[in-house]
Image (cartoon, rainbow, N blue to C red; front, side, top):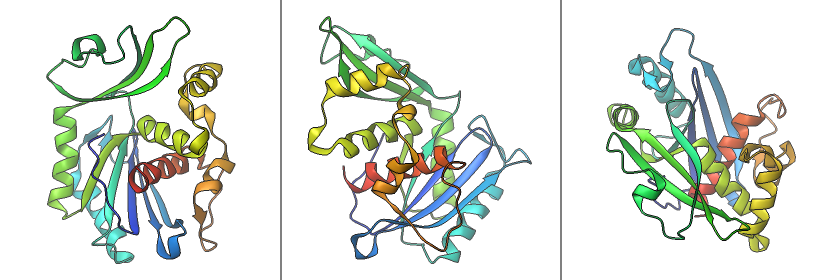
Length: 232
């Protein structure tokens, strides 16, 4: 959602959930994407809740501290958001090129994006549709501007995962296969991946002590956003 292409070899991803902030640096030196630094912060003092930034000063400090520690002032920063405040839905239409009314994206209070996902057996088309309230989105944009963050993208967690699935399949990608896979898992895109998926895409620096199983959902979001920005 709202991406700009880049060729920078240093990519920082920032994930925001209901009460957590996740910072990650993926280095692209030697053309080997390597998760070089990873930090997850539990915002126990209501700095962040349900998408609203109640204490942007503290959040900005966490992010700036991370960037300064690793001299990443010029890195391209990409954010993914997840939470109940985001409108996310798979919508079936009879039109391969649906209107905003057909997709339900004509509500003015949100910024919308959509992506074609798969065809149905009866000739319909399924789209992933997502919307972020404008006032929420503005808070994250202001956070970036205030802290001189080189923000490239704000997207959703699941949108990043759709790009990851496409990348993993490579030349063998078929929308019909995605339809089969995702329907087998109750339309939950995150269930299509395993910890091995992450290791097929990025290398984890040996100096990092990360329990991939425990941190799986976070690492999946990081990997998906990296792919979305580096290869699309």
